[in-house]
Length: 200
Image (cartoon, rainbow, N blue to C red):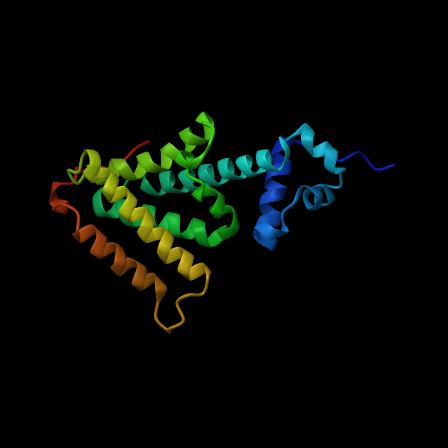
């Protein structure tokens, strides 16, 4: 008799993420997840709080993965170089996990119930970019507008890439670089940006 497979919460969530990337959101259900894990569907409730709980865990995983990538990209860089690195890390995350990334878009402000753990992880991503744009002298609402602008730029470009929206035979990396340079030129004089690498 073969030993019983050990299932824990982390295994459940990562298996769900793998199903997402293979078949999209429509391919993910508790029944499908249980089949993939080789367990009965009711056994999933030992690890997650139903479908809503699974979706929440996927949001948490995606937000954490994105924040980790952005943080690693930003360390040791400042000013425009930090923006370029963060943006590229963000873009590559969307392209590497487009289905899981969709769970990152479920903004905490639109939830009916507060989720401090998820909000804290989401705040990490915002804070990483905020530190960079503040180094250009932006503060308060101006800094938030700049963060929103950069996020919108990256999300829009990478989402079009994932959807196959760039059909012309031109280098997308070059298009993305030029787009970021236009964004950076719209910030206060880069010479005012604080010197030295960022740390988090």
